[in-house]
Length: 186
Ligand SMILES: Cc1cc2nc3c(=O)[nH]c(=O)nc-3n(C[C@H](O)[C@H](O)[C@H](O)COP(=O)(O)OP(=O)(O)OC[C@H]3O[C@@H](n4cnc5c(N)ncnc54)[C@H](O)[C@@H]3O)c2cc1C
Image (cartoon, rainbow, N blue to C red):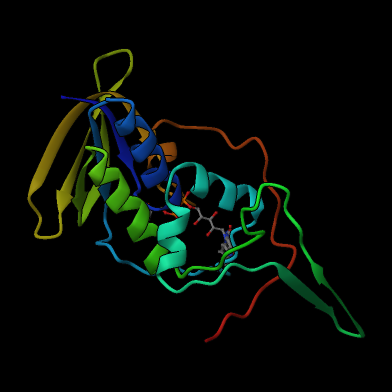
C-alpha cells in the first residue's frame, strides 16, 4: 500500500514523485517506458523551469551533463530576427535545453534517491475503486504479468490522451485546436 501512485514518470510525474518522497510519503512511480527514454521536444526549459530545477538541487546535475546555460535568445520571423540577452536577477540561467533522455532520467533518479519506487515497463489499464474513491491501479508488465497496487491517492501524469483522465471521465475545460506545426530535426 502506497501513499501515492503516480502514473507517468517524465517531467511532471518524476518531479511530483521526488517532491512527495522528500516529504516522507511512500511513492510508487510507474511508466510504460524505461529510462533513459526519448520523446519529442523542443528541449527549451524557460526561466521558471530552470529556477525550479535549481530549487530542487537538479540544475547543477543538468549542467554537469554538458548542457550549457542559455542566456542569449534569437527568434527568426522570416524577414527579421529578434535577439537579445536575457538577464536574470537570481543568477539562475534564463534557459537550458537538455534532451529528454537526460532531463527525465535525472528526475527519475532523483525521485528514486528520495525514496520513491520506480516500476518501468508497466502499462496502466485500470483504476481500482473502494466504492467511493480511486484506491489503486491495475496494469501489466511488458511480458504480460498483471500487477495490482493500492494507494490513498493516484496521480495521472501520463501526458496527452491520459488514460487516467479517461478512466475517471475527467472533462476537458480548456481545449484549443492545432494552430501551427513544427518540424524538428537533429
Ligand atoms: C513537438 C513538441 C515540442 C515541445 N517542446 C517543448 C519545449 O521546448 N519546452 C517545454 O517546456 N515543453 C515542450 N513541449 C511540451 C512538453 O513536451 C510537455 O509539456 C511535457 O512533455 C509534458 O510532460 P508530462 O510529464 O506531463 O507528460 P509526458 O512527457 O507526455 O509523459 C507522460 C508519460 O506517461 C507515460 N504513460 C502514458 N500512458 C501510460 C499508461 N497507460 N501506463 C503507464 N505509463 C503511461 C508515457 O510513457 C510517458 O512517459 C513540447 C511538446 C511537443 C509535442
